[in-house]
Length: 255
Image (cartoon, rainbow, N blue to C red; front, side):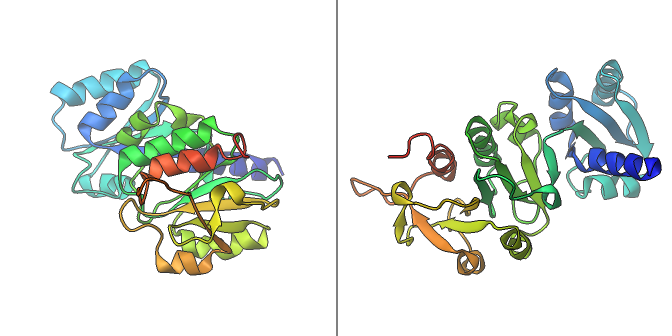
C-alpha cells in the first residue's frame, strides 16, 4: 500500500510539472523568484559559456537539478527540437494537473478553451479565471499555445495559483466530462441564450474558441447550449480574453 501511495504521489508531482524551452524564456523563468524550477535539461553539445553558464548558475542557486542529454533525448523532453535551442526547464506548478483528476463535486463552473494560439490571450484568460469564483480552466495541449514563459508573463504569475486541467484533445474528453454531470455551454455569436439570462444550475463548462474563427463545428455540435454576449453600437465581437473575463465573473455581477 505504501509503495502504491508513493507511486501515486510521485506521478501526481511529475504530472504537475510545466516544461518550457528556449534559452531566453528559460533564462527569464530562472530570474523570476516566484517561479520554482525543478530540473534544468541541457544538450551535451551546448558550449559551457555565456548564457548556458548563467543558466546553470541560476538553476543551482535555486536548488534545481541540472541534467545533460544527447540532442535526441532532449528533443523528446521539449517535444520541439527546432525551437528548444538545447535548453529545457521543468517548473513546479501544483495547480497544474491532468483532466482525469477533475470531479463534478461542486456547482462551480469552469472555462475550457479551444485553439487559443496567442500566448498573451491564454495568459490573460488564466489570470481572469484565477481571480474569479470559477473552479479552473481546461487547456488542451492540442491546438493551444504552449504554457511557456510568454504565457506565464501574461498571466502575471496567476498560472501558479489557478487550477489548470490539461488534456490532449478537448473533443475526446467531452463525453467523459458529461458522464460526470457537466453541461457544456459554447460561447458563440449565433448562440440563442444571452449570457446574462443564463439560468443553468448544475456544474457547467463554458467553451471559448479561437481568436479569429471561434469554436470549431465539432465542438459546437457537442455543446448542450450556445450562449452569446449581448453587444451594442454595432460591435460584433470581443477579444477572447475579455469574453473570458465576462464569463468568469458572471456569477459575481449576475443580474
